[in-house]
Length: 295
Image (spheres, rainbow, N blue to C red):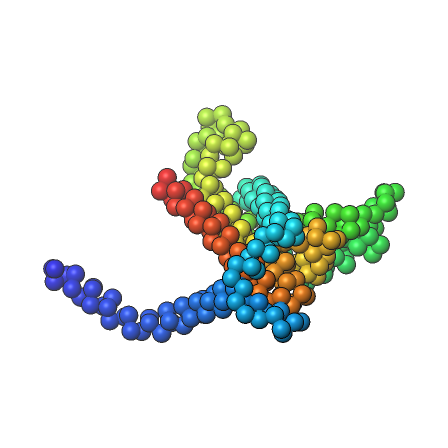
């Protein structure tokens, strides 16, 4: 070992005692709730029936996967995540390209598109439910009446579409911020050279701008997917998982099992399944980002 490498290795080793407490707290913060969830998922534990006790084995998991509501919640979760991703990434890409060009009032437009990101999910859901989508008092209903159409009761007729609209409105600013940063990092000389070669706006977007934004789009998809899998407040405030199970996602199903049916064991089994699915998705997305970075 050379003399130049010894001080560096010693300095790294000297910092370990100072990092150890933080690392230990972080591990306990993650491991203790996970261990308790695993433990309760194997127990018969219902708060309404104290006589149900003891080791359940995989009975909670079997009951979960044989419950039709579980598969309905998985489909609803998939529909919600994919729909919001398509809207936020697609519209976010177009807005990022638009806001990268100079036009009167661009700074105000950027501020307006970013503003929804600072609204709490519960407040956002209440605003959309009462001020926008209410069939009598909401803005959509007033506009429909003004043009002679019957207003739509969104949360009764199209509940999942209503949830998708609300969540997309909340997450569109995040996509625009990331994608706009990617567009602004593109060298303007490339676009100027393409324009001089006769490439129109569409050709520049397809062959220059979009390939440059590929990594940023992958990052947006990864981060949004992880958070969208746990969407709860918007559903709780607006539809409560209904009508029926039309908007019951996996996160809301776990809540219903734990705090409405008081089945702690079944809810814990659902939590374990949700953790496994989230990690599978996260591993896949992280590998996709790694491949993009290597490319």
